[in-house]
Length: 600
Figure 1: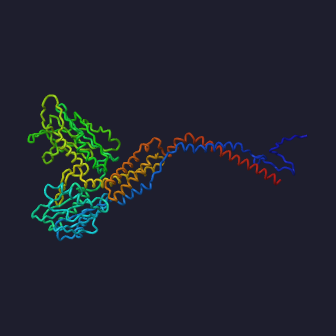
Figure 2: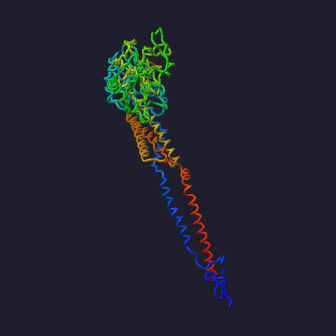
Figure 3: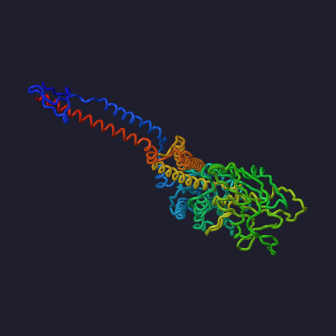
């Protein structure tokens, strides 16, 4: 008998009528197993399930910023410049045939001509009212009137020489009940005196009032109206400055709203003499009113120090005619000796605070007395100068420039000399804020005497500072928040902490509050709110976490982790695809066998 080998699973022979013909290359008689496919698939899915945990481990936390509100604030500031309500009231005393409506119309035309209908930020929405009081004490006024002026209260005989301070106070009492459509009210009183050949005098008080007194003013009707319009625009609106635009460095205030006044007494050579001062008296008696008046604009702190061995950098020369040593204006850039004058020692001026240095320089015995010679050859009355955005310097010469003995003498600067020094410092401080140091304003129409305030700034000057400072702060806030918004949106992997988000929200809230207060005429409150808005915006933009080392882009993340996971992931994926392909092929063979078997 002949023996034949046969595979019961894959038979190679068939019995006629019972089994079909079998091809091992295209068929299989058993169902393919799922064990290998399940193992490779399990490994693949376990690998994929770890991806969310990996993504979570490298996730960057980002607080949601109000991008729409930031863009809205920026567009609003650009398209609709902030304007403040300003109410002007003019009183004409001793005028007979002048009609108030005609006066208001002409004053309004003069104001429009001077402002050129400017719509820049910080300008005024002007409201004008006029009252005419004839010599008999009867009054006529424009309607509607913004001032409850009591007719006959102002008498022409009170505007005498040497009574300016009393007139200013009395006018403040007269107009205390006046109010406009929000904002402060500014008044100009024109007094036409009956005396002949009385010189015209124009005075601007330290409150919000001005007066023009003289004879024959009704005959010079046009000039009077022009001067009233000029006081309203050039003085009360612009603060006596020809350029009322906002520059990049408008005022010497830090971006955090803080300002440090650092006063230094410099003894050039203590071997000759040593001087000290009672600075506490200066601070409490003379500087405290100034810092209080500027509180809405800046958080001001004051400090002082006395330094020794502080020679200047420039040279001086002896002048026989003047019998003193002189230094010229060409020497001013080299006067401050930054190597020997260790002035920046303030502990309170941290971060983005601004420091203004005020220096009293006492020369040595080798160059005493020392005076500043102006370009016209005259000696400076203040013997000092300013450096914009840095501060001011005063050269103070001792009364006796001759040494009494070999040992240095110790002296105190007298209270009278201290008051004179602080007066000069206040004038320099005003110049650093953009105002004139002298108490007079001169224009083509004439000159105006400005009454000085014991606070360093008059009330109408503080109003000008508040309006301009509010605009500058809001523009700076808008620019900073806009830059932060663009930066955050361009870098999706930047860390944005909740603290930054809160600062941005509070900054926007303060900016909106400043705009609301400005529209209602709250000059001081709008300046304070705008200062807070700018400070918060700066704090958010310069937050330390923004520059954290944890920040990296998607490309950086892929480059760091791909060498660890990509090779393994590639092999697992390829193995799973290969096993799936094999399983499909084997299953197709099995299905072919089943089909052949059914048809056999």
